[in-house]
Image (cartoon, rainbow, N blue to C red; front, side, top):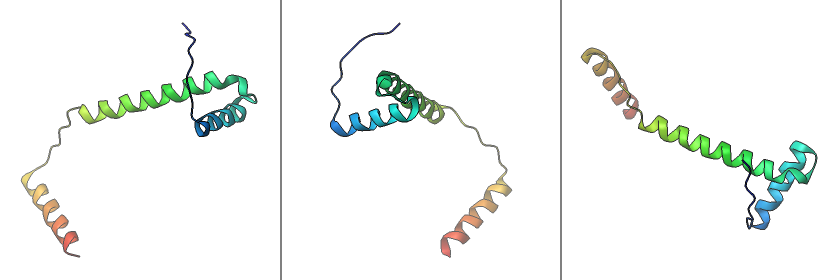
Amino acid sequence: MVKRTTILLEEDLYEYLIKESIRKYGSSKKLSQVINELLRKTLYDKEKVIQLLSEERVAHTTAKKFEEFRRELSRRMEE
């Protein structure tokens, strides 16, 4: 369902959105579509990042592999 609203855009944002509308659709009449696409992508990407950061990650290693990693890291830090 589509909702109609009014937003106040700063000049530079308005110009960017108009240019993007013309670039993608050949007309400034698709401004709402461009705004919806950008908002959807931005919000989706933000949710995706939050989900990735909040997921439990489990790493499996052995004491020997961890010690090798630690020594290599120390060696690199000393260079």
